[in-house]
View 1 (cartoon, rainbow, N blue to C red):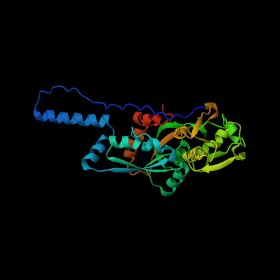
View 2: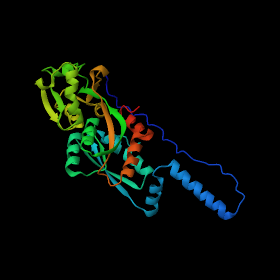
View 3: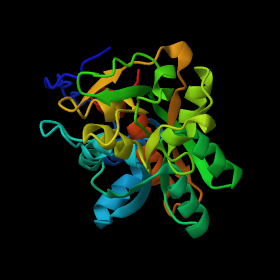
View 4: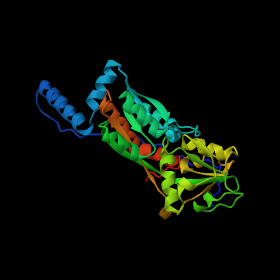
Length: 300
């Protein structure tokens, strides 16, 4: 049993920006020749070392702003927006600092509902659900242009503070003495895999008769426990740690658990796929992964 701690998270030190230098050779020729060669070498250097740099430079010169819409699972909001950690920036703020010419607007919700919205409207630039299952579904619809793997969601048991019912395993959640909260399997990623976790622990989810609350997202079922409307739930670890005063986290052994890969997709419906790839590469890169680690995601 792991008691949630309210101690501050040690922040990662900011990455120092790399500086580039290139030793040139002295060309004993005319001024025009030196200028021509220098311009050609600089152009080749930028084009070869910084994909997308030419377009970024052109946007900056023209003071243009590319706007991207990110359809994002609700449980992913803290690292994206930088919530509950005023000393650090979230993904959006860090990306905008690096690429001021690209603005990312977010639409949060349950993963399956966002997928349904995407199918219906055929609109959006980026899709970041709580499970790669929904990415595969989007691929089957021909909606995905490219993907990047970002991190992994790990389910845990969240019980009332202090664990008064002494719950230690998934199988104990089926007890009639436990008021259970679950996420809707038709809406949320955690709801989709919760039945799989129960089945893996020898419990038929469809035969449970102690469910007292059904939520749309992982934060909703965690709040049900925190507010005393339920005794226990299965939710994501990054969600559970947000309730240090109102809940106690119980780890599920890896062999009894079902993990969820977090994959971001650049969509075929995007009006600027290159800008979308810039964001996907950033969030899946070293700086993006450090933000997710700070919020207790498995992002090694």
